[in-house]
Image 1: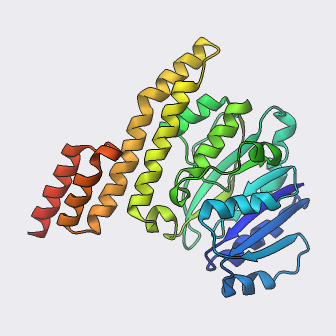
Image 2: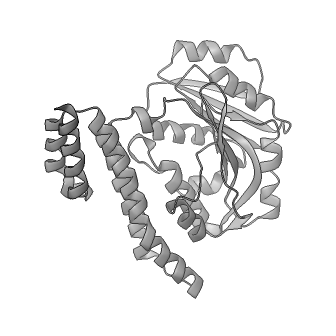
Image 3: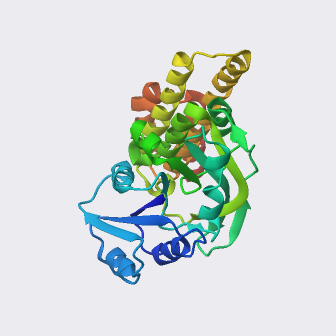
Amino acid sequence: MISIGLPAFKPPFLQEAIRSVLDQTHSDFELIIANSGTNEEIRSIVSEFSDTRIRYVEGEPLPIVENWNKVLSLATGDFFILFADDDLYDPTFLEEMIKLPNGFPHCAIFHCRVKEIDSDGNLIRVSPPCPLFETGLEFILNRVKGNRLQFAPDFMCRTIQLREAGGFMELPLAWGTDDLTWFTLALKGGIAYCPKPLVSWRKSGQQVSVTGDFVLRLDAVHLYREWIRRLLLRHRPVSAVESNLLKEIESVYKKGVNDQKNYLIRVHSQNSSSRGHLRFFLKNYRKYDLDKLWFAYTLVRKMITRA
């Protein structure tokens, strides 16, 4: 059986998301919906469904990653999927995903191609294809190089191995939590892939990448970088191929992290005063290894624009 965990925070698309799960051609699943904070609108939407495969729980408000791990703790299936309340599954998603463990019994994690849609459901883009199988290091390299468009609902894990890995890794606002969790599982036995685009990830403007606290997001990027750095220090290559992969990861991961930092700083600079922007830089540039020249350029340009 497949357990689908759905931590519900945002009501607008929840009914459509639930329906996309219940309409699956593969019927052996449970849908665990957690209403953190007991939102009345979420409770009302869920009450519209009488399907016995739905398990609904309420509780006190929890941080994002704690909520993810809560639905994982309730899972009874051999496989676990973390769904989102504004995304959609094609009807054959589970049918196609459940085929992968038979072909790749050594893998703990599986994923498929994904479609990005806007708030109205219009297609924005489709993720580029991946190899049918990658080692963990190949998967990490392609992600940090920017060759992967991936989210959380397009992955399926073996439940026991996700739990043995400690569940979802704690990062502020869950920024990068899914990436590092997938990396951890992929390093155990590689990752298998379905080339069909079966998940629609909605760019709704309500994700934490848009709405979350700037400093917390910057902390998350910093911790993400530290995880990669520790991987490079502790991983002992068993072949020349692995040695080359580690060297390539080392050569590109800093750029990817800096690109994330620069994006966050740009967003922050658009929403803060020049004086506040400068105070933050002077206080934190050593901690986050911020590029002083880039930051100064942004600040001066901002001052000129407002003059």
